[in-house]
Length: 419
View 1 (cartoon, rainbow, N blue to C red):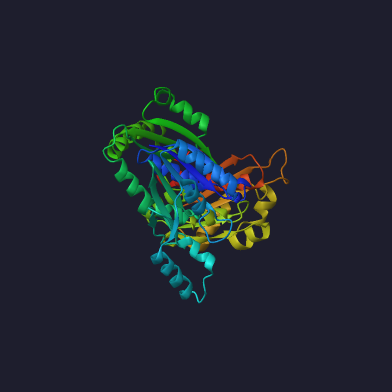
View 2 (cartoon, rainbow, N blue to C red):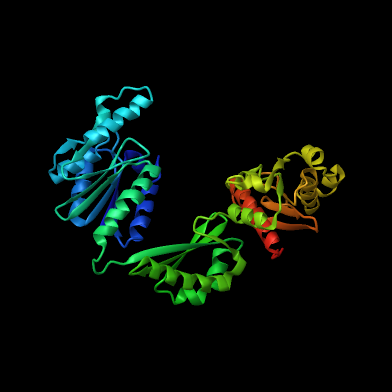
């Protein structure tokens, strides 16, 4: 089945909103064997929207339009699609009643415009939206299936999963030539893209199905494995064989898969080992603590942190000897070790993690350039410290330092630390 995604909204063209919906819809369709041949973005202009709809229904078997289903005058998708297909819009009384109840519960009176969201082309199926007031619409007309979805990502996502994908899967069942695409992402940290590609060269040079795509991210690299097969189970088996080959070559550099974050991987290890964590941050300004606490349930292992940006707070809050700071400087291995030890002792944590560095753009010198960072870990058995130099602007240095600190902690917990 040849598909086109039509994203509607002037805010997308102007760059005020990033078109994440198209990417998500394309991934979902690929997993049931639907190939997206075209993606079109069009603003809230009746003439250009009409032209885009005409083009889409002429060249695709499936058109998924997203956005423009609201109650205001510039929400034109529903009306334009009905006009292009020559279909009358009729009011769905059940949804109109739902809208009445929605506004009554909030002590508001709906305007006539609100009831535009209850209009459905003749012959179309209304898809109930549990998260908003704009329902989805599913319609097959003259050999073309047209799906209309609201723009808010969480509403679009729910309608795709609960209503659209099951209907499309049923329509595709038994059709010859239908193949399923399934992807699996391996997340790699502490290994640059070039070194990773070099390690995987024999696999990458012979790939066909699955295909392997290295994707450089901020301070880590993702490997997307994608297999094509007649069934999802068959595609997943192909992915598994390929993933095992990659694991054999990259080992612990792979910290997780798919949506797992580095902070989740670290949290899992802390739970498994029954350890608590406390952090002492200088140049990262609390970014490590922020990331750790982004994980639900992190209170089970994260005690808290001290953001000791000034030298005086390093001394008063963490017990770092002022003479040590005077002798070696705030950005030094000695101070990083003292910060990690201090936060561990003051919180009675199993592990203390510290970071001190020069985020820039000023403050650097020949001996201590911008980006220089020391990361230390204090445990019951020892204190370990690494020196790193990061590049980029101030925010990038902070992001990379936080990433490196979490990776250093992960390697410490795995027992594979290498300076």
